[in-house]
Length: 360
Image 1: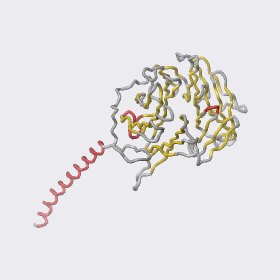
Image 2 (image 1 turned 30 degrees about the vertical axis):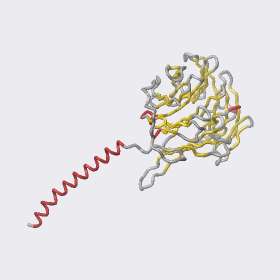
Image 3 (image 1 turned 120 degrees about the vertical axis):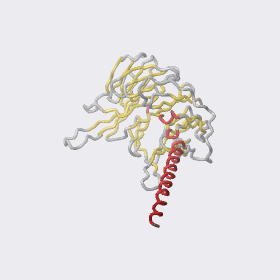
Image 4 (image 1 turned 45 degrees about the horizontal axis):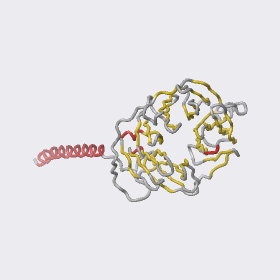
């Protein structure tokens, strides 16, 4: 008799506990879906709650591309976007857009000449010249190096020229061995001629940062190695020395790493830090930290924008990266892939070809 009474009381109690557990799980799921990760904070200074006065702008223009890989400013009011081999450009600082050309290879860099032509470098080693309507005018190839056509790995426009980084590979006799880089070369293209600027044996980077006066930096995308090139050739930069993009009197660099989350079975997550140098790269100061990816561009050495993509927030500095204030929170920033300053404002492009305009 006692056993039956205990059993009859046990099952209702079990049902009540199960219902309570289910309700708690649903409540936690609902609350977790509504809460976002904490907003990124500048590297220094007390934490502060985000109060953005700027409202999210009305839906911006949509670039006539299936997606956007990168935005490039080609003049004071012209900006171009490309994805793969398709190009679209705006001549009014991003307000209106039209398709400006389509190529068979992926576009790496674009240059606008004084007579309205567009010169582009593609990853198949070709240099394409298009007229203002996108019609092809000319196609050049890189000159052979010791009888072999080099492979283009990166390119950038600077000072009215295209700067192209290329590799020459060996031809291993052993079919089980992969080709290796035996020469790294930088070329300069002005639309009419191709000039070899610097060369060095072996691998010296697969990414390029062009600077003024025909100099620049190449670096490896998979480790900390970097080289400075110029008319005297290549020289290795010590691993402990940073380099960045120059905006007037400051240099800005973005450091990225994988951040481990404490706890068993927790995966690593990406993190980024913006660092700034005010003495020509001799010393660097952390200016901004965020989890995930940070996209950065500056108008000059005072005004700049950092898009903390994983947080959907754009942060503005008006004092040369000494401090940052939240300028805009917008869900479209979660898909940001590129940010540029053109026509007195910042344009942020999303992977879905939408644009967000931010007026500093």
